[in-house]
Length: 586
Image (cartoon, rainbow, N blue to C red; front, side, top):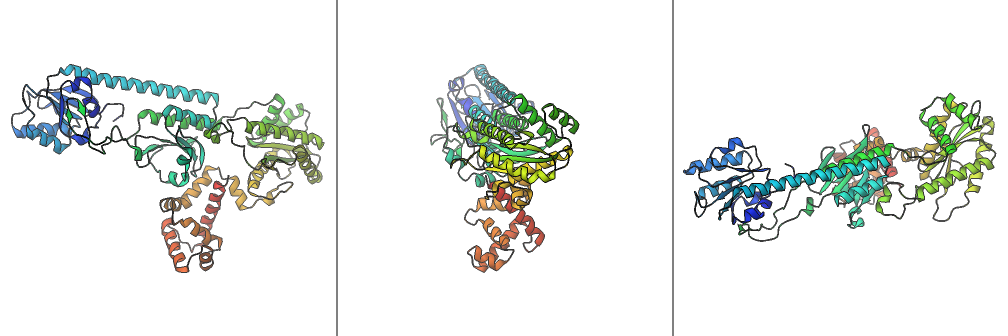
């Protein structure tokens, strides 16, 4: 039932009820049942007219006179899910309800309350119904504000950091955005300690395994929803709700009776619902939708000529326009691409944009000025280098971190000389960086003989540039032969399908290590695979005795449900391990 309804405990604290000097005589453990409605009844067979969740008020004048009838009356109410029974003393029962009613209510876990002073039931029903309606209206207003806020963020194309901040602000709870490999993409601690929030995040996150796309993990207190669009999930959004998990609020020690309006509770009783309010579920789902939509939207603020360059490069990369149209529009800029030898080149810094100082959620996207400004400077330097080297071609930023160039050369013989001249010109335009400024990576694709194949050369250059980030060599130009398997996996590290592969191959082991941090069997698997499945050498590398190492290998096989003597199984595990390293490498 929705947390918008008040509980029996909250109803007993209302002034009209307290006026009746309430006394709880049974069912104390169920005081936190929600009250959906208040119903006044003076007939013994009222249960057939109820739907569950009602608080029944009665004077008892119509109740059975025999013990069996009273037991049946209480059993019928409990059977339909009534939240509680309130009996006003004075008309049928003078000093208290019959003991048989108390015993039956206690046995069925039904809160039974005596009102020792005459109280107009209409005041109780008005107060409770007003509380329900007000709570529902408050929830509706909160829901409307959530929809309006995230609609505005979607229209404005807000970066992920802003979406995370708004979710934390609206909920008042810490919010974390992570990818499929449990790496934090953005967060807002909502006033809590950020270091404590993110300490050991990957292992902590792997223990949070709710079912469904949106669900609440009661043990950890995290509300989780999947983030993705067009059938492709790429992350999770998590909100920590202080009303559940280890943060559940409890009542301190005291009497369990309601006497003269003072309501106490036994130590350890949970106050309020043990699931998050509906509005928080709506909030995380709307925030996740906004994040997914924002990933699909690109905002361009470049000059007209640069926009045309970018439009043409993008068209070649994604084949969104006919090549004849691209050639025609390029010719309008004074650039001839037909009957030329074309080479795709991508230039980028070795690391991504520096994190702005605006706050922790800036980690989630390029919401500050340093990233776009650095990319703009790089694009201008590349354009200048193109002119200094007396070369022609299209040039523009191709994503948030890299600048692409399509060189138009007279023939294949000029390729190596032109690339060397261009790389030297780029480095002259971008002199040796300061110690805090990462060096540039210049990557070139294979030369092609026509515009129809230009997209392949550009794509290859971009992939090589991304893979070269793991390569610490300072090569003038990176080409495809320089990229090995580790580099290939590195450039694919953000690909959800690769992350899904890693989780499928190693997820059970990573979850086991998260639950048993002292064992860390992943290191045992790494030693075994890196030593070519030589168990003796792997035991030495792992600094373990052979019997101990063999026992850990056997446990690994059971956890992963694979035969570690199988070449195919070990090959798959080794690729997954290399992919995990690539995913964890910034």
